[in-house]
Length: 173
Image 1: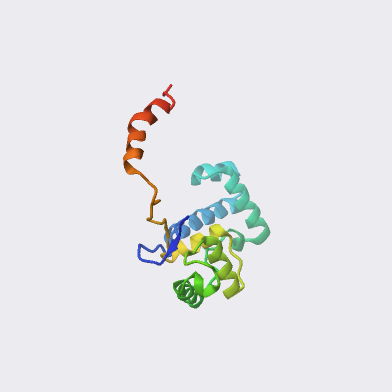
Image 2: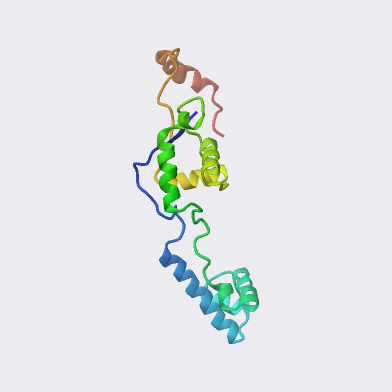
C-alpha cells in the first residue's frame, strides 16, 4: 500500500491542460465564429472554415444567442484550485507534520486521508481524484514502500520465473 510524499520534482502550475496562450487561441476561434454568425453564415460553413466540429459551432451559436459575447468568452481553466495560496501553504505544513499529528494510527498519508484533512481544515470538499490532482500540482508524488517480505526467497522466484512460468503462460495465437 503506497502513499504520497513531499514535493521535490517538477511542478506544473496548471496541472497540465491548456496554457493561457492556447486558451486565448481557442477564444479567438470562437470570436471568429461570432463574426460568421453576424454575417448570417451557416454552421457547416463556419465549422469548415475554422476546422472545428459543427457541434461546437452549434453550441457557440446557442451561447452567443443567449448571452452575447460573454457566452462565448473563455471561462478560464476548469481545474482551478479552490484553495488559496495561503491555504495551500498551510496544507503543505500540515501534511509535513504527518498523519499521526492528525489522529491516524500510522505515518502513511493516503489520498482518502488527504481529502479528509482538506475538508477538516478548510471546509472544502474534494474527490479523491481531485485531491490527487491538487497534491500533484503542488509537487507531491506517489510513493510505494521499498520493503520486501522477510520470507521472500529470490532464488525460488527466479527458478519459478525461468522454468515454471514459460510452461503455464498461454501460447500466443
